[in-house]
Amino acid sequence: MTDVQKTVSPIDGQVIAEHPLASASEADAVLGRAQKAFELASDVARRTHEARRRVRRCARREEEHARRRADVPDGAPAPLHRGELGGFEDRARTMMRLAPEALADVDPGDKAGFVRRLHREPLGVVLVLSPWNYPWLTAVNAVVPALLSGNVVVLKHSDQTPLVADRMTEAAKEAGLPEGVFSHVHASHDRVAEMVRDSRVAYVAFTGSVEGGHAVVKAASERFVGLGLELGGKDPAYVAADAPFDFAVENVVDGAFFNSGQSCCAVERVYVHASIWERFVEAFVALTKQYVLGDPREQATTLGPVVRARNAQGIQAQIDAAIAAGAKSLIDPKSFAGAERGLPYLAPQVLVDVTHDMAFMRDETFGPAIGLMKVQSDEEALRLMNDSRYGLTASIWTSDLQRAETLGAALETGTVFMNRCDYLDPELAWVGVKDSGRGCTLSRWGFESLTRPKSFHLRLPPG
Image (cartoon, rainbow, N blue to C red; front, side, top):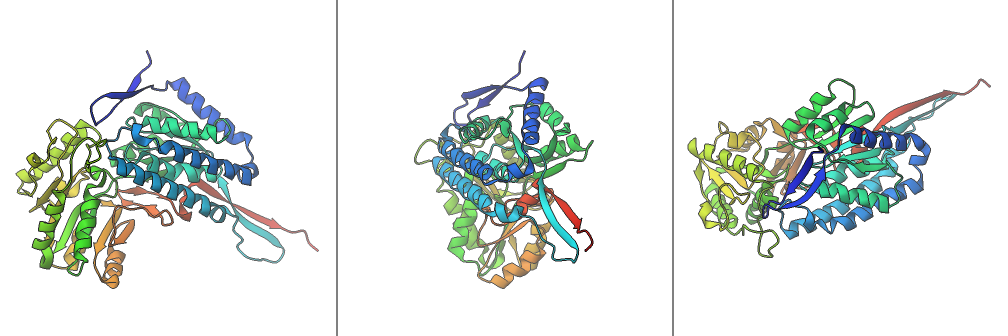
């Protein structure tokens, strides 16, 4: 009997999609078609203007499919869908613009009697493992540059957002990509592990949890295969004494609760200078109370459900443990209609009197809950921001560029923001340190791991 993957909407608990999971032979066939498609095209053919035009057409068709994103059950309100579409377009078009220069041959300089160059060669089959949050955005980070680099792509999307994989494959066919150049598979974790171990897969691009990253590394450990891991975060913000106050409050609140906090670079802990502590906490709580929790299909809703009831239970358990250990809750969940234990609908939560002894301030929450701590100095803020096993982004809220530069240089993180948070600029490298992952996506450096350098060292005949 074929196993069936059921996708349940967090909005109302209804099953909105069913997909049969790939058998071993079906997964083998997908990889076989992908490998054949890669072998049939020469490196020159993959880099032609027509090949890149097909990728551009594919991206445009994907944009059109993304406009129908309402059938993707992640619980995000409609304005967030529109924002994701804009981000998808920006990232896809930026990578297409950067590709010719990033993938061009490199001339190391003249050397008498020799012709020398460095060529960037595609790897082959790239297996992209994408998560459910921002399902179009997270996929485009790897899919578009992989195709532009001359690779072929097999996409496995989250069991919560399999429809995105369906739509992207439709877009590839509509754009005229040859069979096998882009395909998808719906598969169990065990089947995915088999695919990671398969010698036909040349690179694995994974976005997800730290635990998922460990599973990918374990599956790949028996052979030498490239891995890109975009993992979790516990991203900090420091609100300095000279921060642009109202602007900081508004944007840090948004950075904490946007998409119900379900972002890898969401703000999850905030350190506030003692001189503005009371004022900041009061303003932060007041703005948080203005959120409207409810059905994301309703116009008034600004905070939808988290992705699954079990996710909500885990977030609530983290909050409860912190309160039991001495943290103070500043939000009464009963003031948010619809918030109920056991359901995916969670009221936003703000905790103070938190410490780094609490899992709430150490482990990724990935939900609408934030901890605020008072600090006496920049040095204390820096120490606490770095006191984490994660290192994805950190934001500094200040009117002093030099303060941001100085603190940023000492922060153990992939991206440093000043007066901004929860954002990806596709012209800058997106990287994580420590448990936030390895490798790089976006920017011209995002092409590096999707190609291998090949050196041409040609000695001319004498005379």
